[in-house]
Image (cartoon, rainbow, N blue to C red; front, side):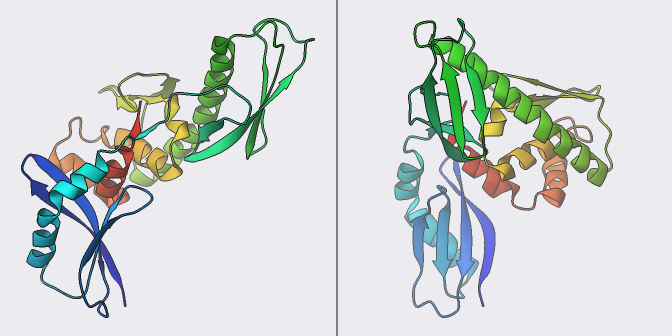
Length: 238
């Protein structure tokens, strides 16, 4: 039998979140960083104090590993074969040259696994590519996140006034006291579990305007692993 739970320890001024996996047949305790940049501690059945002691003894190593360069979800590279972020995955970009296309009018399409852009190589600038992707991301965010917000608001028994989408430099979303919710449409590049967390986070501000303990307790009712998600989101930067 295996048990998994979220834990938190404080080392100096830094909080370290980790997943504690209990496997009775294990002979010793171990710490690792998985592919999602999560700290994973595997142990046999032991006292919690021993788990905390182990994490603290490896705190410097953990923080060094977690501080490695994070993925930049906002920077895009416009070349054939480039990898473009969408819902936590990297999709291949295929560029097709067509001299019949006018200036600043690339045609962007997406088949679920590959982005294709048809463009005039003589009348093209990176800003035109960026504009095409901005339009795509904004529309996708509107379609997906509006539906999620409606569904979660109904489940949480909350009412909002309206939803808007824009490109923001320093935040993933916001919620005003009057019930207006704004989402950064760049969020559609993140894994779906992050997107759902963002929706629940902003909706929760309709009930609690600040980040008090009551706010986080309310979030936890609907996203029990929100602490782990918040930690993983630090891998991504605006």
